[in-house]
Length: 307
Image (tube, rainbow, N blue to C red):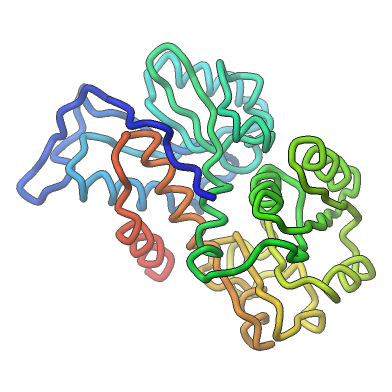
């Protein structure tokens, strides 16, 4: 499943090219995009998106904005007032932003979370590129979702997109979260809006051990492990088996403790940088109406994380 733009959007802009083939300067004609969240200091999206703009010679600029929960409503009003073309939405705003939008794409509405907002000048429309961005690395590996039992750790905005994409692909999903009410709510939401069914429960060692005993794919959608390779892991290493595919959507560091321990246990792994690049590419297409240079964006993410 890919969250591709339904049509090519016309920006009415003439690309500004320099001799190097990139953005020549920021001017009154430059189209502004960005990302909002709290925190945003770790985000790789500006480097990735700006590299893509430069490569295609587009007069666009992408900047990060730190926005707290209390500032979200004002920030979206500011998007309108400043004529910002598009915003990516990250933790903790993917669900909370919904009431402030004029319309929501059917996919994002089903998921119940938005990670991309596009302005056409008068209307703000919410989309979700996390679902397509998450599923693409699995498709590239030929992973068979149908009838596969999958464990999703976490129940936030990213988990909604991940679990939805998995169920749409035919997987059977178990959601575990430290706050079990959120896991149960997500499972109910998925059961109501998809033909599949999901189960929810508390994230503790007993439930984790039971869920992992018969799963073929485990996905960490929480921020556990973000920051340094020596960070925490949401899964005890003793629970990892060679036949499990471990997918950690945390992308900073490039190799989290969970990914390192999974590889040491002989598991196949997918690091969060792949999902980041794919969801960013789908957002890029929403912002510009132009096919994204996905390989360049993947390379830029890895370069930024290893520098």
